[in-house]
Length: 65
View 1: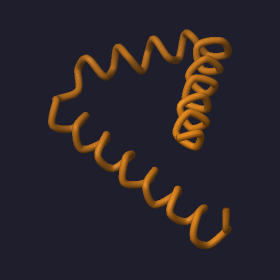
View 2 (view 1 turned 90 degrees about the vertical axis):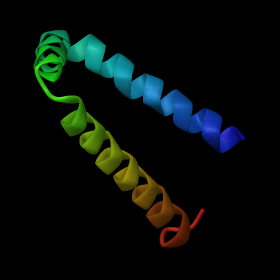
View 3 (view 1 turned 120 degrees about the vertical axis):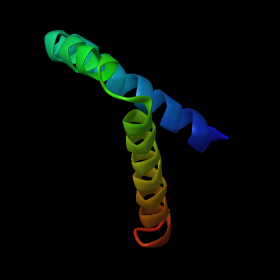
């Protein structure tokens, strides 16, 4: 459970840094997302999730924990 809370904390850190350092670019990306189809956003989300799972697996199995 502590790994989950750590990961969640890191998500908040990354999100916060984006809002702090590049708010204009973030607004532009959000505006572009409004014109993107739901299917394309869904596919991008699934690809990002799969990449995240692979990255965690790699870190745990290859690099050790």
